[in-house]
Length: 122
Image 1 (tube, rainbow, N blue to C red):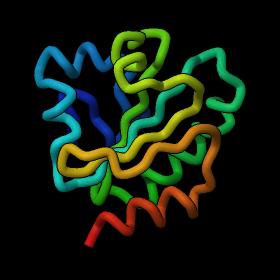
Image 2: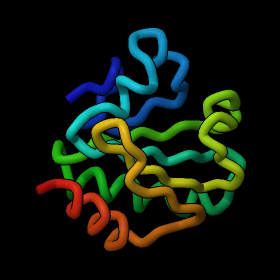
Image 3: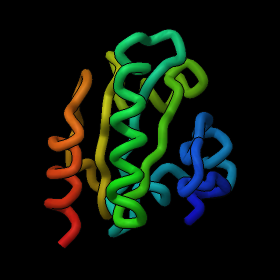
Image 4: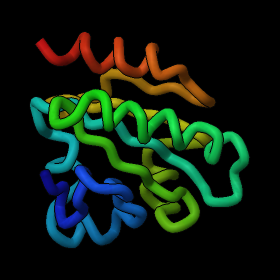
């Protein structure tokens, strides 16, 4: 499955620059799907983000096509990060049908994220 030119079934399955996605579609279109979309906001220099990355990888591996997962580098996507008020990293947002269903700052357990996503897949 491909998300706007990014293959999310092979590592890396995420997009690093949302601007590339925006060229093909708007952010609204990206989040406006019945399939839950998890966005991990991170930075390369962020220690907790590096520790959180394997959890995101495992989440995608275990949930497969039932969810979409992208990672957005806040340094490369400052305007979007500011618009969404991402003030700390890592920050996770889950969208479905154009609505933000969850926002969490800091690291989360695999079980927590899976349960939040499973609650949306009914």
